[in-house]
Image (tube, rainbow, N blue to C red; front, side):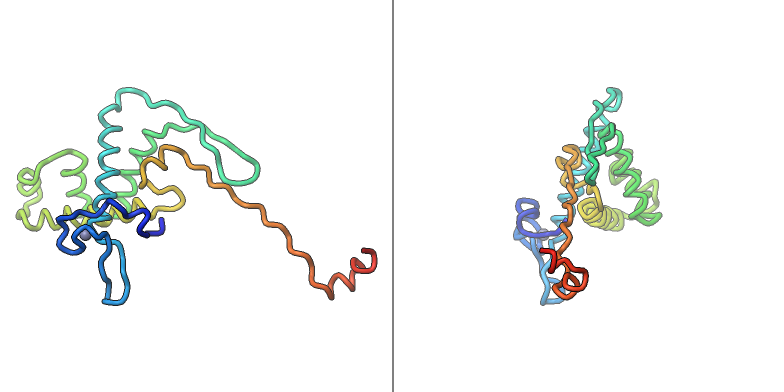
Length: 187
Ligand SMILES: [Zn+2]
């Protein structure tokens, strides 16, 4: 995903001390980038969908028909709900380091509150919430920028967007080449 005003609109928090809901912040005083609160909002959207999928795990998800890239129009069947849950966990494991992943697993996947996490992981409250904010920022960005199938926006993931590959039309050969091959004479 290319971050611009159209896809960050409405994600920033008005209470954010860095952007105050403007969804952009300055980087090195010359460049602008999406604010971290935008990445955290993207993560929370993905997490909410993950929890919804987990809550209905006992019901088998409907099979969907997906169209593949390319000109031959191949298709395959998939279970979107199960694939989304697997992607969510595997991308998190690949993106986070060992300590971050432990906090992610206890707090976000197993639902332990900060008191239980602090006791179990032997860390203070400030350190724990620094971990939480860093995890939300890293995963929100990764979920949105993942290629070729990002987890955010979740509606696009479940809609099974069709990415068509345009056929390239061969350009006409240069004039000299056409002359030598006789194309110009025969025309
Ligand atoms: Zn912000």
